[in-house]
Image (cartoon, rainbow, N blue to C red; front, side, top):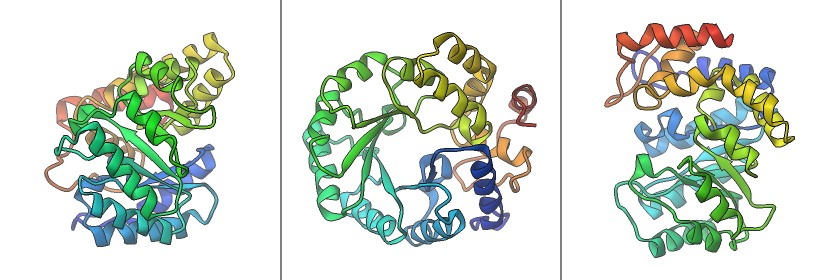
Length: 279
């Protein structure tokens, strides 16, 4: 964000160029790490369009379009399709605490309304809503629901889901500290916070794990383990916003109620950035 609270498109362009050069596989725009919760609907749609123009098809763009209102999620997913996003990412409705039946109806309604590949997103630690494996299995039968970002960090949950979906259903983790384990246990990849600051190293670790090179993957993961921990020392996206600002991507501004990383955590995170090669 700029100092006046507006979206800093200059820094966004620089950050996107960085990810293209670093070999990132795809970019999530207006995800939760991107402060999507503080964007109004008009800003959200403009951001998706501007981002697609900046990316210029150099990478696939996944648009965050989740909401705790089904109607709003449909409207945002329509924006994603109009912006030519390759897929949308839909977090479970937060605060409402819908039932599993409600989750099925919510995601089915969005899938029926907008013909775009859709990725489920389960992060109960942030939403107070846990999409159970059986619900994922049911939604995986919907033609344009193509995967899940499963952020519980539970290998047991991964195993449950694997038994209920086809091999082409994308199993992605949203828990950086267990990403290596997730992929070694049959997951396909990650939508990562750590990858915002060390995308090449995160991608290399994921690649090694996907190839079954366990010892090498674990060594690569150990090199960035401090980042996995310190990027969550305060609520995401507070630490990662501070980190990318330290790396030269814009001023450190967040919209309330998010605040700047507490001073006591800044030096430990700076040290981890230096140790990982990000600085």
